[in-house]
Length: 353
Ligand SMILES: C[S@@+](CC[C@H](N)C(=O)[O-])C[C@H]1O[C@@H](n2cnc3c(N)ncnc32)[C@H](O)[C@@H]1O
Image (tube, rainbow, N blue to C red; front, side):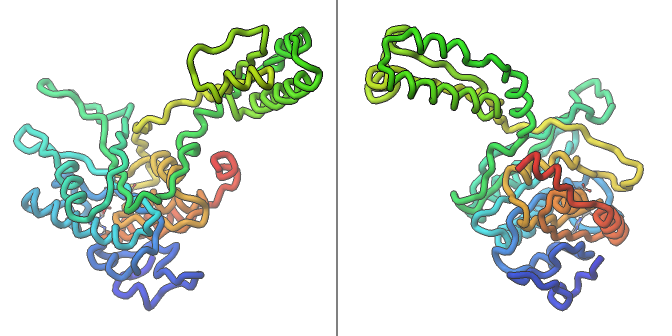
């Protein structure tokens, strides 16, 4: 753990020197962020304290007397994050709401609205974290809240984005189930029966084998082949597309991807762990999927409200660099211990990359 009074004095060397790379620093993010250079991190993932929701040892943000003061304080942190993120980077803020006198105050949305007005960032998605295991409390006059917003901001249209890696295990399982050994074999007989020239038949066989291999490798879910004189022509469509393939080459192949639609939802439970003594730990899975979506191994991930160290622990496990700031010395020590125990797991990287 580093003392945050001067980050630069204790900086680690790297290609582009970034102070406190792969370090957890104890201190106030309002001051610490100002010591980071412009555009030095790839992604910020964080969950700031919610408005008057929890006591983190009486320290830091969230204890402001008014909602306006809370949002101002949060915006100061956000503006620093925007400055520190590269133009290809992303900023994820997970913020929960608060009931005051029986009404939600919409704190997350008031913050997000102001963040857009003041900084010129774009809001790419409002991702909803769905908790299948919310607080087991019953209210007679309202429903139990079981979701939280995660705002995904970017600085430019060139933001890094690895769409296929987000919740990728769902696509893999869907495709594997469908790939059988006899896939597409019926088309071989139809090619032989057709009135295609010998050259066209040969070209059709090669294209068919290629499509079968793509299914077996899980790159496509399935395909359909149309052969001239055997299958009907498609109605409408572009003249230069499938119709002309069928007419000129004698066949056409329609590939079907059937991937799970990537929705702006991450469903994962809140996990209480005895070894992590912090009142508001968010799930590792959440961080993992956001990193899959927006980073590559070697990228730098910053969390200015590190708490028990979840963001840094996941970043390290996935082969990313981390920078973590935390105001409470006890949480800071806990986060250091947790991150020290983490090992880079290449198998997980192979699976998702
Ligand atoms: C919601 S918790 C983060 C929990 C974290 N995501 C995890 O999984 O453990 C917010 C944390 O921000 C810390 N904090 C509050 N104000 C801060 C400030 N100004 N600078 C740095 N940390 C602060 C609190 O002590 C608390 O641990």
